[in-house]
View 1 (cartoon, one colour):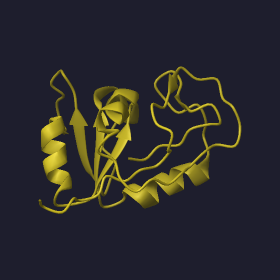
View 2: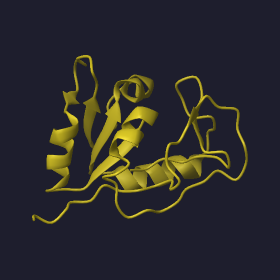
View 3: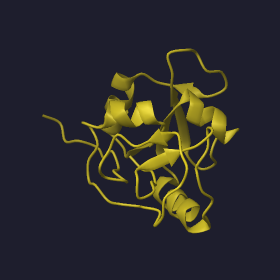
View 4: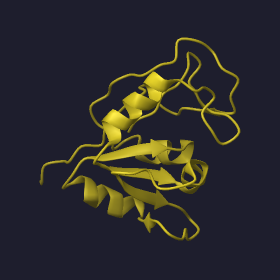
Length: 133
């Protein structure tokens, strides 16, 4: 799971990030490149297109066209064989909160006006393959 937040835990404003910072975007790219990324429908729509060099997967209660869709269980199964990175939004972060592993942090060093706040105390947690039981 990866996201950046500000000092208050803000992660979104008007369907987008509350800030534009090239180092944050470069960090996101470095962490997610050549991996499967999972997002909700609103995050997918805010991107406008599939992120290149990544397997883009959307979770939604409604059908979403022109992109691979999976259920929660299917994403967990995928994560048993490869690294899967949850990229948002808020509902998807909350859904995978208990499944995320290896916490790291990425915080913006100021406060922004926002409407969406993280349900997490950690700011970056990759969902790694788990060993079979």
